[in-house]
Length: 383
Ligand code: NAD
Ligand code: MG
Image (cartoon, rainbow, N blue to C red; front, side, top):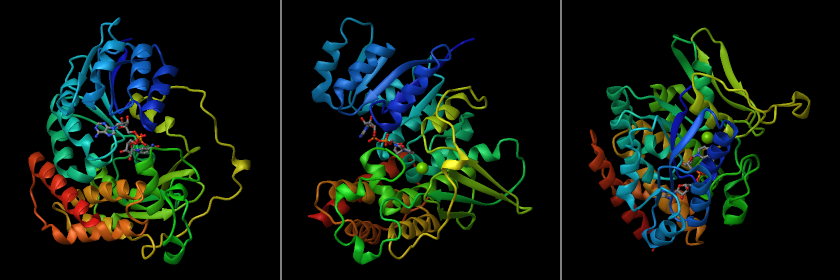
């Protein structure tokens, strides 16, 4: 059987590393032809020596020479810079591009890969938040599958297998993060160390802060709209602190289907890579008696304003989700360097949305320009 050929973008991150664990578990099914990283040259080199891809990209050009020299003994092309990222996804042999880059930097390579007819395993939710309409339209035009890696969306996707029936609504589950149940007063002085302690998942810093502020769920609501073609009113969020039910679909006869399992990203990563098949693996199994109660709560949109801002951005449409995302990326980076408070992040996002006018029917260059402008506005607000 021909092996499935994968490009792993963001291979040194949390999802990227787990994706390579999945590849390692199925050596006769998968082959890796591209690895990319922003700045972790040591890990990129180690991964390249282990997987012998055709090409690697180190985004940070200052690190190019050392990666090239370290990989000189092998026939591996070493590239650097943003343009290289869009170039490597076009390699002939690639069957599927796993996009595990963090942030809107993932948009251009996703679009380029779609244009070349490559299926996409999408962890980079920002791609769909920024330009969902454009991306889904292109995927349709090029006959490309967008396979969700995000656990909630993988759950919905799995619930829909074999269903030609309309969706009444979906429920995206959220753990609630480390600040579940807190008041605004409680959150006024929380530190990045507290925000970075997620109860159930170990992830990159940006998505961990987004999980604490519920912006992650807001981005996922937008992601779900585009992946599954839903109206905003059809997407509900329910807090489920145990993270065992990964999300649910409700059909028009009232039947609910849920997808469940231990919180482990390797499963949705594997499913995106093997769909429509399920490969047998030895990852840990769920044990009912270790989870005597699965519980549910309403999210508090007054305390966690980001979720409300995201719903509103989705409802207003146009460039709003792109502005929301860019301002959030700047706000999270500022929070992680102690320049903005936890609650201050929502103020920056809201004010950036106020300062930039909405616009509709955008192309890729428009989105990239709006993303850059929003970042400038958000940075000025922080100064
Ligand atoms: P991470 O910070 O651990 O890793 C990010 C990867 O992207 C790294 O390899 C880094 O080198 C690369 N990168 C960073 N900035 C870049 C840039 N400007 N250009 C190119 N590459 C860049 O992040 P993560 O937690 O692995 O998350 C990756 C994506 O997957 C995010 O969109 C996140 O929302 C999504 N996601 C993550 C998880 C999780 O469990 N970590 C779960 C669901 C969805
Ligand atoms: Mg998720």
